Length: 192
Figure 1: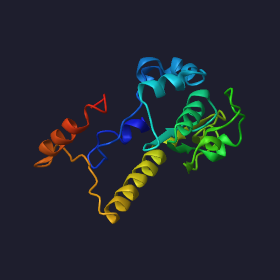
Figure 2: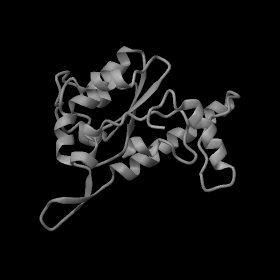
Figure 3: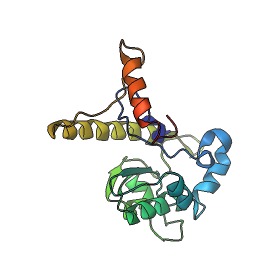
């Protein structure tokens, strides 16, 4: 969900290329996505399909930060010189052991760490049964990611670079601006 939060959004940067692999997404098989996220080697496939370089920034999102795909993806990207930003829960990840062959957690493999401040297990409200409800990682993660975009835009403008951002298709002129950006970046971003 958070990968889509930054992609093709009104006000969002045009150069965002999400790694949307259906095996890791919930709409196809939510339970299987858990197994796939724990599978060592899948990160190499993702990098092969979405090559990154030293000119890129890769944001990797994992609340627990312990499974193979996010950790191996960070290691693979950093080996290519890519700057890696981890969005994770430090409280959660520091309370669990790594569950991947590298023996690391996502925050240990990233250049920059964004802590969503979440609880162990993500949910924050305790029910009568003792189980918890009310996960916070998506809402807080979306706010953190949009704050990163806003700061990146500020920094680009301070350097005299005009950021390329999509415009709402529901405001006058939005469709024309978006068509121009799509034409420019569709050859680089499959999902556009």
